Length: 344
Length: 287
Image (cartoon, rainbow over all chains, first blue to last red; front, side):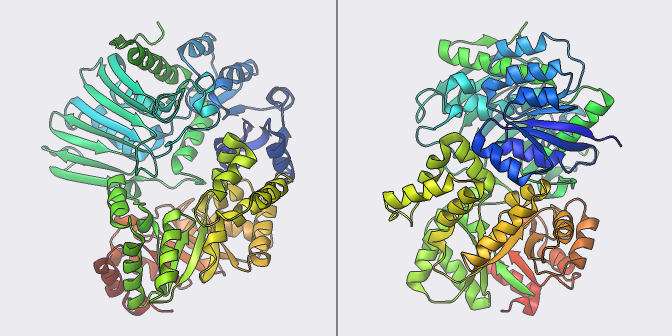
């Protein structure tokens, strides 16, 4: 099998993670890494003699014969790097979110791009959430009617330092950083959103929000709420929990388990309680560095790049999350209900 | 076979749910409540325990040194390099070191000494990583440490990028400077064993998942089993109970099928659970 050649832009924690994964998959080879920081670039040169290291990503894109660009830089750099990678005709992986805002997304989507693209909303590759999607799509418990959800982590209890807390570079606070995962998951599970209204509050950070509360109504006749915060105490790891009410039962799903209460027997679901932990559902992967979901998303990109097919979360799909986030911010600022048009 | 007491429950980590994690945080909020469970374990024959460089573990060690009603040996798990990289990206090298020295236990480092450490760390990546590591582990070295275990995210990242020099430097640094045995935690045991063989490195102590469901045994349960059986170094089996997702009896009989796995780590947060493990594992708790 031909190995696709991968170039990684940005050797932060996610860049190194994807570098390691692509370096180990049968279908890919890690050819080059671009890292602007001199200290880090010199470390990469000395420890990875077989990998070309650049400090200017454009030089890497021009000089290396790459098949895939992996972009794991701060968000404000995404748009330009995506467009440069598009000009080279590469398959592209970008860590979430796609861009700073809907305007940048529209500019990315302006180009009718045919090669595979994928945005790193990794929860789409977690088996607990995938089982919830199967139950909803196959209507084992009938229609979904209502949900409430939260995405919490204990991360910020004083002013944060770095680009993540500068809205011009990050696009916002906890909503775009962490909450974007939730919005993407809603699109994955429930489809498009019709209207929303939101509240946001900054407590520890001056320039970006630490707490967000949103009510959302979907086109498919389901509505619910989301609470997002990186300043919730006693959540050592992020937890995204969705409690759903369906016609014939309920589902609670997180990264670690799915608990199904059913009033009917349907396929693998028995009447009463059905609980699956990730230990019951997770498949082995060729290499696991910080969770199998990252390996599964990189494998998915390789498949799509080889077969020239659309990925589960390509730029068009991921841009929807940015459009919704724009409306959540405008709803919170303007104290008004917002209708979602997805950039139309 | 030797049972080693795990520490995740004491710092509020649950592999099954965050709700359970929060319950554990409440239960073990005070160091004395951790101490009580470890004391019970010691009375049942446990001689070894895993700890990590977490503030809660430091509180426990201070309580342990003050009370000293039993003896315990410790395996110290050190954090992942990715955490250092993230902090370095956000706050720079100085910011990373300021964070490290602002923790409890090393407040006495003078500003002159800190400046020297930062200047040394800025030399190159190895200096940065070892300086950060030294500051990280310093407050935990007053007890009997059997080995220092590199977190699986670090091990697996270095493994995936195939960086033999980083492993060699880490082992030498731990052996020569800290006078400890270096061990590794990995979720990719087959790749680990194969890489160390290819690099002509001795088989070090490894902690890796061994459980009947094959959870976290990559690239496949079969391949990991084969590599584990062929390994000549010491192995500590982890994730044997899947944080409560697998039954104790099922896990025990699976573990028993490996002749060369003589150490395993178990999480227990009560006398009853410790007792259940003793009952199932029989006389397998020993020094």
